[in-house]
Length: 144
Image (cartoon, rainbow, N blue to C red; front, top):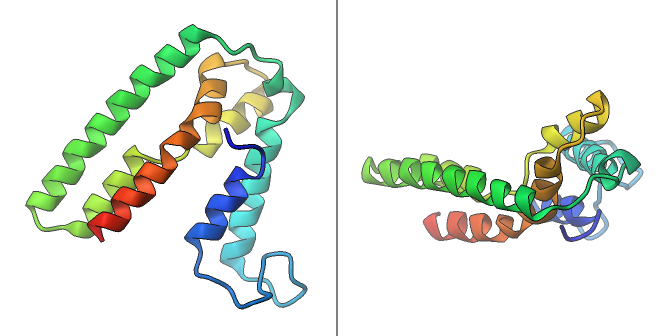
């Protein structure tokens, strides 16, 4: 997964670069976008390392099922991206690439804690889904 700090690293790289000392933790006036991103990353990280989700077993079956679902998602968004490029719509192609090759969704792991269900597939997605994020960012940068 990259550790609990991975979501914060992704946010830092996708925001406009702040000034030399400008971070979300500075005492200056709050930037709503950064505060929202920081609180979302903190909530996601807390859900991932919550004892409820840490107690879920890591099985090969869950990893295989997550892999199959991910292949379907990537294939779908690849078709969307190619159709967008054929229609000369680069922005839509970039959104499709980032949707198909992105970090795992925040909501499933948070809902697993909130409602108390244990899902091996959700845990597999959280652990291995981050491997796709650099590919999506690279593909989006190349399309830009």
